[in-house]
Image (cartoon, rainbow, N blue to C red):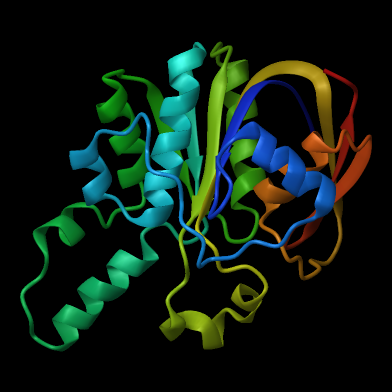
Length: 242
């Protein structure tokens, strides 16, 4: 499998990181993420919408709106391994305790609530999809982007995000000990040759960063060749300038 893109623009949010300068400094110094640091207040997301969203979804929608404010977007793909996991745990706990459910939790618990919130906040009926595929969610989202390019959508916005995984799930997800920080990474991609990827069979290796954050680091460092580990594949990337 081979993929190819050109990067048009990007935006990312994590605790303590919001601007391009902050992310560039992070990439050069390999700074650690600190979940106790605040996430910047939304600049584009309406407050009433922000209050309904979980932290990870809020960051994802804010990233999407930031790019929509300065670029033309023809279609949107959201990827998230865990989606609304925190909200779903609250629902399950309430059911187990025979307590009434929060209407907001119920309405916003589906996996595509974040991308739906983006199109509603932007007031744009964009073609959109939401993907969850384990640790390969971001890479599978890139395949979805390629299919949209083939279908004629020129500039496709890919937003990868997650919130913090509740402690309840940690015994079954030991890799969350490596990275358990809410984040969102948005890439606006066209068909092109700037970024090329070839997948090769290979076992997954434990990585401290999600796939999209690894990608952003390589882009900001102008790394010519890098590999992102997946569940059954090694995603080998080449970068050929801007």
